[in-house]
Length: 278
Image (cartoon, rainbow, N blue to C red; front, side, top):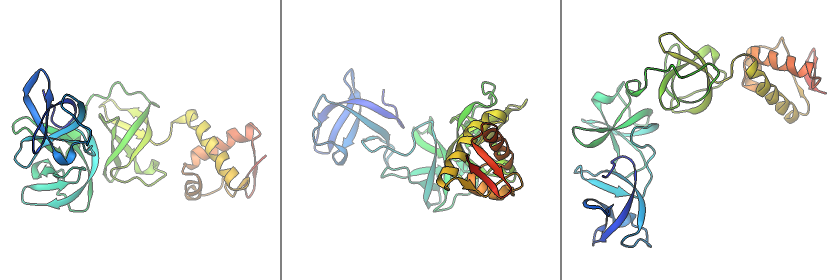
């Protein structure tokens, strides 16, 4: 059976004037056209080939050797290339743009802007549809996450409280503004850590590990920057948080823990005007 919205490994069944028809050798009735412009020069009948299957302008399955920027049942940031009376159209790397109907927009989309969307197959129409209402496609039960777990994050919405993120392409999480020590934009993918899982299954995340676990990588970061700066940084316990963040992309609390560790290990000396390598 053909899987629309995913990569399919198929057999070249027959060649025609418009392209190759591909399918499974045990069910040649369920075939799909690979147009000539996508046919590799060395493709022959009975060869295997990996293709992405979607639907054309007449809602017929069609194959391509192009790889889209998003697959079915995945999240990804995509740009709006046009807005019409049926919805917004996104560039997803294929000739036919991807539709986000008005009903699937969390807020009105604007041409030129990027949005994180989820791609799904509409069972009623057989069409691939994108939605920016991503929270309804996330798993509400995050009980298998544990504090300090390393996770992958995808930022999808900026709010007054912080940045809403998708955790491991499955759960919803929140990065608080007052704990961010770098710029985060919608569509950014980044490594992070679980800070806590609340009783209501809401998840707070951080770009830094909590507590002692954060000291070692932060200490290493300080050593690397010290080496780049010829062994001296004009930062110490009394430096403003903004200066520490600008130089090291870490909080003042983390900085103080890290230099304390480095000082005890006799890797640095702490001076009135900054820190220096020993």
